[in-house]
Image (cartoon, rainbow, N blue to C red):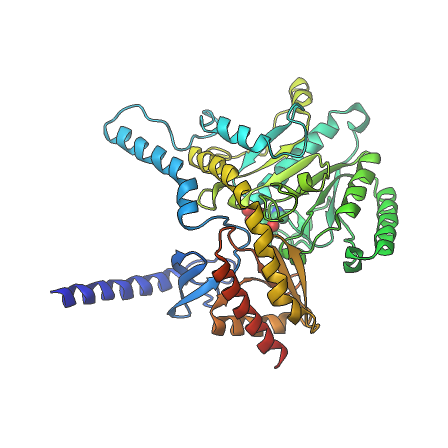
Length: 462
Ligand SMILES: Cc1ncc(COP(=O)(O)O)c(C=O)c1O
């Protein structure tokens, strides 16, 4: 009997796996439809260990990063998900008894969930400006629309000032940047929205500081001079967007803090607005100064600040833009926000979870700083061999493979052999990123980094 049960559950798994494989062939997810070389289907997770179905077989890998899309696992994740779970349970009981129930999500035209209040109060304490200013939020589901919402809000505020009312507003976007899907979001280099589409105008790429600026005062001064000349030449740019620490577009590179502060001051002095996109590096991942946002840690003084990704634990989609001031100005000019859609900022479950995440994350600031040291300790000696550059801080790191795509292909194979999975980046620069959950155990992180180091070593000694 027991044997019979085992074999029927085994055949159920085999059946499930073959159905999963068939489904995968029907879906375009970050690649060509039907391509079998993607990350596959995730079956189970435990800590940083990920069990998945890939290339027709089940495998277990150590997940070193998934585009900053998770901050907690295990009991910590359970803790932040608990209020949403209780609300769902209660809602189910009421629904089944046909009683009045508190909705789990509300279409934006009917109202907003009650859980919004706790979320707004929880995020307010982390914003880089005074809580007394008339700051406001526009809440969205994904990061790219949060950036668009920020652009719209800042452009509307600029247009409401008499001196800017009739001036065209272009956007200054870093020549290497990522603010969402390359076809529909902002970011450089950008792709046309569809094959052979005419290019949209309005994004003006600004140069990023050279890598030497991280250590050379002279390189910083030269960059600042060039940036000032760029401002003078591009008067049509009304809003600049900065990633204080880059994500995939520059593989975890960090703006030198003092330089970015000066660049932002220069923008303000020349009447330009500034949006810091912290969708990748925010939420404490940067590990600086016990702050949720780098803008706060580095005193950057942006006019707008985006957040997203794992703010609702990666289980519920939630993102948004916080704008430093101007709520009253928009109200008195009767300007409505148009960047909104059916379920933007509509999920009670997302707010309940995000409130818990915002309460829990500060308890992990120290852990982020401590674990950060392991990355340099284990990968640093390999970087010295000159075939890749390591950038990063906190729990957001990247390795730029200097020989590009061919090395990336080989590295993926070596990582597969070592059963480790960083976040692989193909373009514009080939490399990998490390962005684990904040509660990754030291043992898992060490093990994962050692496996990655062995894969890099194999690549180097080819
Ligand atoms: C800095 C930055 N902005 C925006 C986005 C877009 O977020 P989403 O993928 O949720 O649209 C990303 C995604 O990686 C990002 O790294």
